[in-house]
Image (cartoon, rainbow, N blue to C red; front, side, top):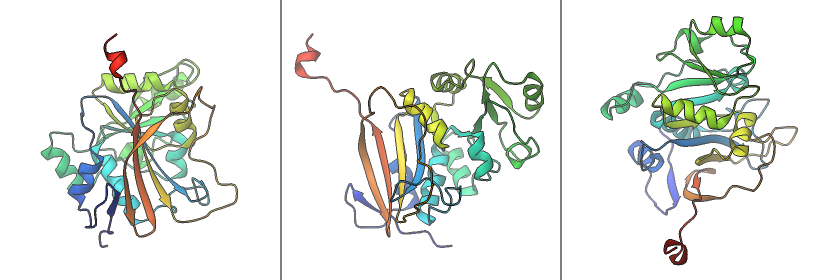
Length: 261
């Protein structure tokens, strides 16, 4: 399959972007700084899924960026419901991505971290049996001890909350393991909890040129934060009628008056 043509609208660039160009466009300035990046695809009318899954919304260009974001991540964080609904397999990158990571002194594959309060996971799935790196399962103190013991045979269990998984504790626990480049792929409830906790640093959104209507869910779900979170547009790419955006968190800037106080 040929590589889709992707060009940059912001900043403006007429020529097609190579894979190396795209990697550079999505690379953070400082890998040592903990960064939570969230990646989603949505329809023009704000739908997150078609027939319950998001894969049908994206196209070849979305898949290219999806793979690049994984290439750049230390850990890929996904809710257990999304793992089941989207049919996730083992977190194994292709040869080109693994080679790139090796050349940049990174492990060949990112760690797969699955968030589950109930621990109702299929331990016979490829997620665990074919994992190139031992996965993590993020849960709570209230998780069933017997299920936890079974999971510990195939994955490391990380407790990040008493009754509910707390995003701040998740980020802290991953960073303590050296997993500072955190890519969250959903689902909506997990994303919503990170918004509520003010724990999102970057947001990558693919806008599919489709209207889905019906009862499709939004890309985030959960309580409203105390105030809307502001982001700056880092870039906007185009592949035919598909748009691919990268937003970074808006940080307060010091004024001459405040800097002298």
